[in-house]
Length: 283
Image (tube, rainbow, N blue to C red; front, side, top):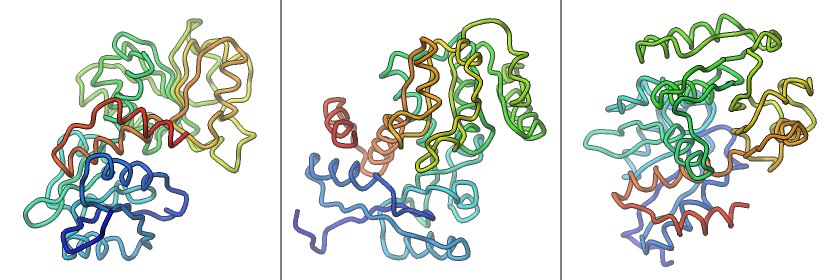
């Protein structure tokens, strides 16, 4: 493409950002859609976050993604926040509006679209959710919204799990999230579960660890979704498969959260064929 005075700019704010695969998604989409748009990552130090958001608006940047560690902090510098993102307490996409940016959470929407593409359902399902950090927080709200029957929220800090469970249960008016200490997993009901791994344990380069190492635990899982996408097969996924379950990584979540952000910035709908082409590129 030719970069000229009409080229629009989008980007990613985070620290670190050097590993990101998001430029592959957005620049491929721009080329396929015929949009005069370029997407680049911006390494932003914590004390410069407010300046980065205001500077992006001043530079007429069309939209931004936000990654760790700023998904919660960035909310303080926005003009408006989508209701779902406000409820979750995390923003990963900024859409330019008059006077600033509006914050959205396309992680949760991307995860749901990714799970649907893998024929994984949440409605009426019994779920084990590992972790209570930012990623798991979004998953917990998604499970509440999509009417999962029960979600056993396992976390190292029981206090943190209890706080998140209270928030989600209060938001949806039902006791769907059950907090547990992660080392008490043996107290789970003797059933088969959908398991969602939302911690950073197993993330490259620390690939030889799983948040729970006990092989017995994995016999309780019929299907697993690890939000990590690098490595392509985490130890968590491998243990699930060795116990006879199915396992997916988080690459499609990355793909679809990016596609939804692109759709919001450009007011377009990306066809599924384009999504699959980019998925092959990412792989």
